[in-house]
Length: 283
Image (cartoon, rainbow, N blue to C red):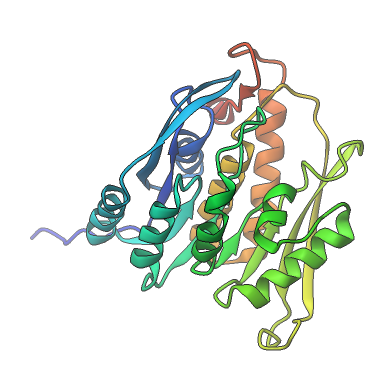
């Protein structure tokens, strides 16, 4: 007698495509695979880019993006969704429609630019990005992206934490803000990442008392940093799927990215800001 197969939990990445393989959907899939999590992929935009920068991008039709997501959700047992570059306001709104009733975790890396400094989000799309953030349970911004979401200037650590605090009032579904510190205090030899959560039982207080967890690691001198935000958010999502614990997922994702950057340093791919080399993590 055959035994019915048990559907394993899966993740879904919703992001843009990077033909150079360093960031976007490509970095997401590599990260999930390295960490032992099956990942579907819905592409929001096609880009033309390499290690020297992004030369153009073409958002896909919103209905087509929505259909990609719906078809995956209809078939796979998706428990966790990771969102990266959205591509357009129309796509953001289409995702809002389809994710409104999703009961799992939605982790959003609100990508505003590439590691080479290219903007991937036009200011006219900021409002739609904020609407999408309202459906998410975890946000993983860097400092620049936190400023977009909160509308606050974040010149130092304290202001960044205060800005993150405002997000819990703006976005009722939000459970945590994972602030990556690579762009904060660039002169420091130590990089600090932050996991910011409302204290248990205080979610409805205004503003809620916060629990702040930190992860410290040395700043690594490396030219291979393309895809760091994508890889961190995907690692966090993978660990959250496996542990169902925000604190553990944060600690492990921060450590994973630190090791990935360290292993990638010293290698050369392309002539600009090189990619992280995920395959080195399986040696």
